[in-house]
Length: 433
View 1 (cartoon, one colour):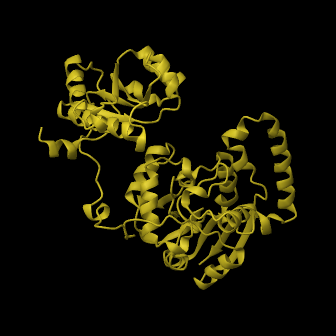
View 2 (cartoon, one colour):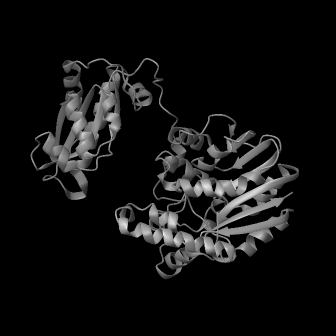
View 3 (tube, helix red, strand yellow):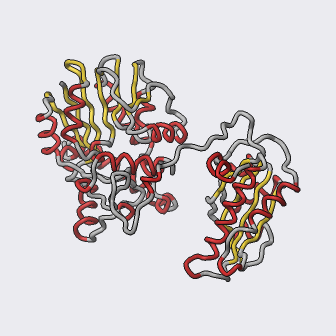
């Protein structure tokens, strides 16, 4: 196979035929690997071919590796010598080059591969495979004959203009800033960022299921008419709830890539009426935790207004600046000066790009300027119980669950006395065209 053709048509394969891979081909693949460049020609690599299912199961259970490795007839465990060329990770770079050769050579021989890096306990795997201590596992390569139903064309790549610059770096329309301050971004940069992280899965937008259900129960009676649009869903957690209603439900995503990732990671989401452009007008439009991730809110709300039927409903679920979350943002941005995207987490809370949490007053003003009427804003969640319970560290502390139950009761009391309408973490906003 021509080299450039092999590079362009290779792709990750996760579904394989139940067919053995000949040892001769495995040796051909490792022969290609050993000709990869390595620092000082030290050839830092070690490869172990694994066909035994019991060994694979030990690696999954004890080494905490992704279960998908069982799908492949052969696993190649790839190790690097951690005692050599440690400067600038030269040993890791060398072995990574060898893995690239493995994937290309396998593809040229009619085999498929998947490069698995999700390895939580490398020392355990080293012991299972009886590998000396000086080696550390870098990856496991799934290897086998692709199922005949698998399409072997690679997914689209960024254009050269998006990734190549000359002499010095400059921020372009294809890239995005590092700051979490939304005023430094335009909407296309936010979309580009969301496209990129959507491929990593949706742990980044994880909201506890009981919180989703509770919010949905609050708003489902306000969803009027037959045609409903959920605007800018990310993982589609709320959209999948809407799809269970006896209505025609659409999801307007920011990009096709996010739609594909949503369907991959959210098994409840149905592959129907998922669009990237407005389609006619709607009786109800919903926005679940998305308005804080929009740089051009005024224009977006005007657009929403134009795409609602007369007397149509807009339902917004968003965060409150005057809440524990707004306080945390203030501490991060002002006191700790943590303005970078990856330094702005709160316990289990993550984000889907830059944000700006708004006050109730500003939200009302924006809605009125766009022409909406009968604006009603209800607050919920004075305490971040759901987010706290979702953290791995706190899940291990069983004695705290009793405290959480107390906090939930206090939260319900704050609901009764309307204190959550001022300091609740979440606002549920309903209004009409």
